[in-house]
Image (tube, rainbow, N blue to C red; front, side, top):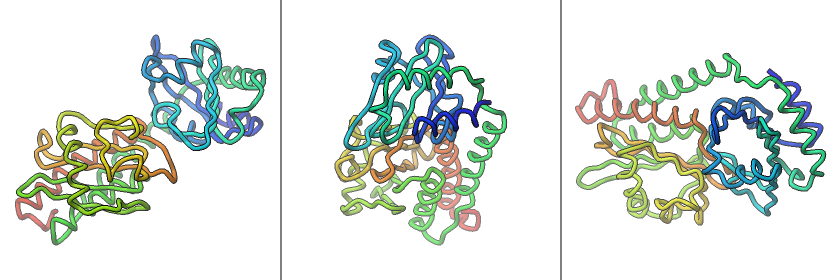
Length: 292
């Protein structure tokens, strides 16, 4: 792997993040290595050229820049205020960080070619560490206990949000009446539980058929106030709990103080947490509180 070399290259350029994308099929790229988030997310970002306009521009024109007054979604789960994407013909290299958007084109191209020349393969140790992270997150949820449904639900939401570094978590439970239980890890809506319940209801029904990943809530048709980008949230991931979502939905979100989305590893963690939550709630609702 070229991790040390990529670190040196990024530091020379003044980049906070570096992503090295390899083409694995026409129009399909996978982040295999990098620096900063590019290293931490290695093997866990897969993008399609046709659904990523900014990256598509870079691949068509050779270079694309992003310079904004505040962080916006650049691609996939990555948010930045300044970034540059360079297409080398075989690899796509993305640099992110303050000042990157204004760097000389020749310097960016030279750095990208150097990065592309390094061996691109996600190490086995990284993949094994990711698998362990998924298992640990599921175990944390599976061992939740509580003397009330609220305690159990809040613990499930809190442990899932913690595993994913999210600032907000909630469990929406169907019933008569339906209920919502929230946890605050840095962000909480300025709203009543009923208002949050109403905002989460469409997500609960939508997540029953498939994992819901909203990388940018500004573009989501399901992002209703008070759980919208206007109130401070930037991205959200939600998974059904129970067969066909019969129990409800587990939902976590990132806030604007640390804007980012959800990698494929995050999504794996979310799915495993939802499966563990199904067992926890099932045990509680059966009255088996010793294992709930």
